[in-house]
Image (cartoon, rainbow, N blue to C red):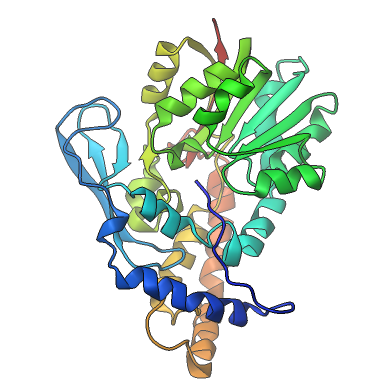
Length: 365
């Protein structure tokens, strides 16, 4: 889920500091009401299988934006499903996504997504390897359409559409990365898109969904008979998840609501009429676990960068200098972590260290 920041108008080309200051009063008004309204009641059963035997897997804060709040991930003792509990309410989803992908966070997110062409080519490869050219491909949770722009290089005859809750899909259409950009909720748009697509992809999308089954139902509706569903999600069974704990980036609280073991997702796909034709673990692994853990840990202890949701005065010059000095001191450790990530990536799939898995499934009507 992504939402556009409700950013007040600032005359001219505003600096980041000016934009932060313009947002500060609105955030403080939100937080003056407390954070309890950002959460639904805690549930006592597993949202995946309904079992009532649960255990706490992780308790953490927002390690990326440092917005206030504490978040708990529970795990079902029966099926192994990991889920946020209590889950964010609609108000919470709006608050914690605000300025993450859009608004204040837009430039940083766009830079991250633009620089992942190699990963995007890898994501398209399971379909390319089949030796057929899809006529129409829908990328759900497309953001600004960067995957589609890269995949078109491999499949130039394919029409690539994208769907997202933010205005990114519409922007991507205007800038030529998508043939058509849809803005909205996939389950609500699925009847309009019914039977139009040979491929539907969901890359790191399902974990953000409040109801993954509804998303898969929507995919089934949008696909033609014999169409392909391509899914990539974080793997909660990764050994890194246990070793790194709260510093494992794919936990990504509070945005990630549901993290499903591969056996659970395979079983649900089968129930919905899909046949899994490929399962990958090593290929979708993103070799950043150790580097990201180092960065998150350093960011947690260093003085904060200014943000409109932080209490008190904006950080002064001394705090900014100290933050820079701490990260410079940590640079050698981050270089070592980067080298280790790249080395481990060669065996991540076989060693159970892959931080993601990918499924390709065919819809058999």
